[in-house]
Image (cartoon, rainbow, N blue to C red; front, side, top):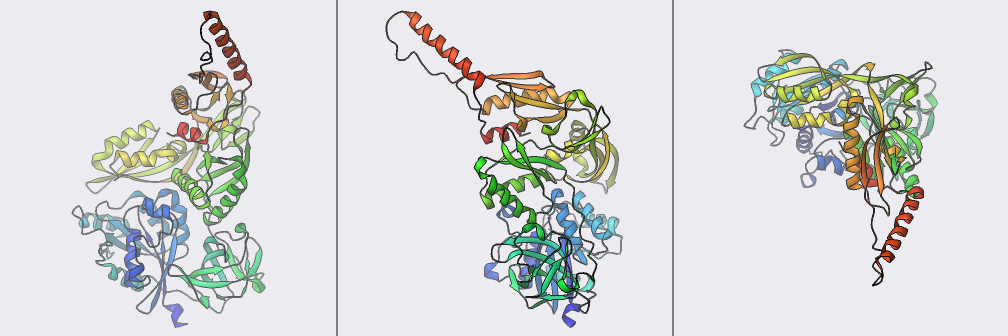
Length: 593
């Protein structure tokens, strides 16, 4: 029992590049969880993508032994698209290290995650990182923390890169994060906060054991999916899987379930003993995040559809925020309509499918959800341009707005005002945070936010701007569907929903790009942008011209004219009946913002 009472479960919450993964590295070194010869940067970032981009994408648990205590750390992402990963971590721990960059101060996403941690009742340990940098403003950041948390907070000062002050952080976790209220005599209840698929162990669930205990060969049951199996193995993450005889109440570890169907071990489910399944209540679980962005994923080669389906099923287990629905397209064949949390989420999913499963993809235009009101009183939820009803039947369109909080240095206010003006932002208020930074509150259409506003903000503020947002009300939208036609045939994968006043400009840009990237055919190819049947932009792709007169020599010029006339007639006939094959890269090149 003594062992369980000395468990401390905590996570690190911070903005991107404030040093979460570096602090975790130093902790693993100091607790000798990872041998010095195996140590590398970003130890807990297991994916190549995380290392390349320098960001955390997946939450990652690790167990450390320190001064007679068991410290369970969950490293969390900082990007706004992966806030769902943070929310799951917060429900699995009792404490949180609030890590803030001494050169940048508290950022918008940090505030958002901090409020979630406070609502969850976590013990907060404020820590200022990068104090050794010349641009560090320690006193100013301390004041920011004091304004948010109250003046009685002890703030720890560290340099995660050099290790200075990190031992004090570990001591603070033992001292300030409350010990676990263990209940090993109760029936088993374990909360699944993440899960992965392993070829040898089947579905492996990462769990926080709330009540009771579990060991290998115990018969288990998932209350949500209503499936049971025998537990193959229990263990802890150090950070590799290390088998353990038993997981007790309060511990964080893994359970190899033996299940083969990835949909049977959902994040947020409760694992119980099979014989007690009718006697215990399920744990609260997690609220499933609603997608903000929709796009179609199709295999570049039609024969690869079975591989794409299997890859997406496995990816869904590892990424429960990805929503998927099969669909059929005339132009692209069989594929999937997927819901994402933002453009970075879409980019990561696309890259993982390509790298981990070798699937080449065609990705259709990203779009947001619209509510379209019809003349007969019905209301449709439209996720894609392909679902857009006939313009004559539409009586109105609603779109989602979001409340956005943007924190920027005062000197960048001008570019930020201009950026939000271009993206239909409505300034709701502003609040100065000290003398150098300001929080701007905007209301903005979701369609403007999700595509690339985050990147544009970073560019406009030299990387110092940050934003967080929450969903707001539905409002009337003046948007229309813009169709792209190749050889007078609509290509639904290139259709987009745009603001009415931008439609002509967007149409011209798209057909101009299409002319640059579309391969030439044996005949002249008209490229058109249309709104409700009316052409608003056009380009013409010239034909590949074969020199059919090269075999002629001498004689009357009328011989050449006859051969050229015959070629022209053939091209005209071909243009009326030919099927145009569009290479996958064309879709990607045309749809780039």
